[in-house]
Length: 153
Image 1 (cartoon, rainbow, N blue to C red):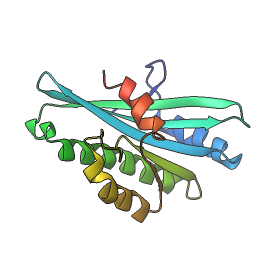
Image 2: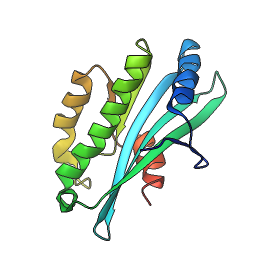
Image 3: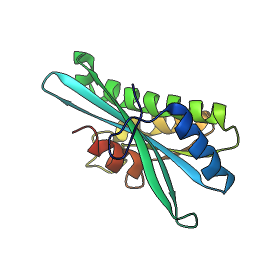
Image 4: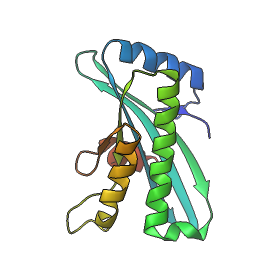
């Protein structure tokens, strides 16, 4: 998968890491999220890396997309686990390059009765926090629920 800027232009991985490094040195937090949409016998996954810091006057993101025609993603738990896997792997890669970075992983699940994903909250939160990341779910998971969601369509 190729990383793109918000306008859809390809961007080199090294450029993203350099920008994230500069951003975190000034105290910025990195937000990683993923989302997916299954339709027309295809599941589109999008993963985002976002920077949002009012003190630095920064609000930008990068994304990558992949398509998978596997019917296994009709299963909600399988699909959500793949989303989280994308976000976790991205966050771990960032942490490898920028060890002291503050990374928050946003997951498009919620615990309210209306959320069909509520049965996954405990498992997913344990997975993400067990790896040393902060885990945000709906309604605070904007990197996945808003940005990544936009790129699944």
